[in-house]
Length: 384
DNA sequence: AAGCTGACCAACCGCGATCGT
DNA sequence: AACGATCGCGGTTGGTCAGCT
Image (tube, rainbow, N blue to C red; front, top):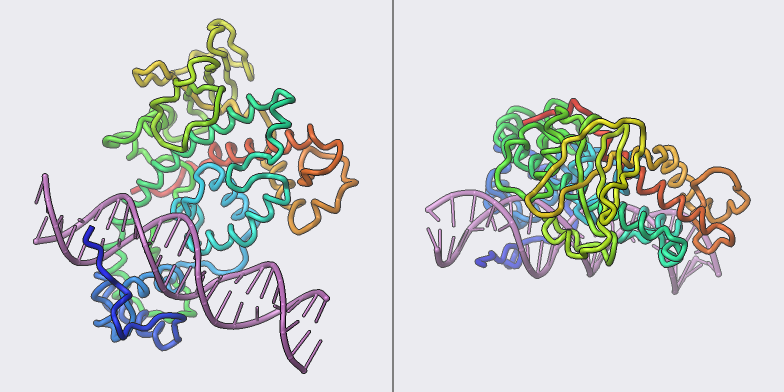
């Protein structure tokens, strides 16, 4: 509705920015802040549309941008968050200090996607490409469970992203003031301010606890986290989902999660212990870990109670497995190291004979590492 | 040396969301 | 509430460069 034509005006320049244009844009923003992007080009003496200016600023000129090679840690974070969130680059970027969504998107498309493919993991679903095989081996249940867990985490991360966004909006006015005081050049790095809020990583700020009308999944998170002072390690939560049928679309509502009817199971637990039970066998809780504490349990009024998984902590493996998986798959190493017998991870070749169970193990490690990331939030992230 | 191919990445485009009147 | 303006996001394109044939 009412979208403005933006760049289609005649006389506006397109294409690569020149150093002179960069300088003009920087100088203007330093002096006045960006304010209204649409009005900025005229004021700054640029023959560009506001959109182009904004893009140039946010993706290139902004002083708080880190350029250069992505670290292994950053790669892991991107992959893990992508597994949880899909192509929500802005949210992913909010968890990576000084990286832009565009940069992350490019890096994903040119490096990580291919790497995962080589590992035999579908870069879209983050499931092994030979999933059917796993199903025949009785692993589909676990894979589906992890998928649901991922959706749950996705809801949580989105809630965080919203908060980050709000925080960003609040900080923008401050940023404008600060920018007007400082001078800069494209090559200059300034650490005196951060236009965008510091990354929240994966913790959930307390502010979310009093949040407004949000999706129920978010509420689950809040319920789970509030008791633990935002310490996911000590939090407990529960979720329930069907193990039958395809995973529900990645929506953030818990409604409909009971649709399958059959095959529900529940998680209860914290990072140190957890219980799992299957619907239909109400008394059959499988205990992971050694605690028998009664845990708080979220109820949304639907028949869905539940879920989450610090139980994952018990299912598995550490981040090391993932790192190994990632590094060993880099380039063609994973394909050539067919004689690498030891270890649970690292062999990405989907067509390697005799590696089928390993493939499942890898996938488990992979998802566990993702969930470990979700559980390893620093507790000192800056709040609003 | 010339042409080809693929990798990389800055920038563009179109759309939905949000804001302001 | 309705409407227009603006912003922000994600997908895609196109230019440049390096390596290969």
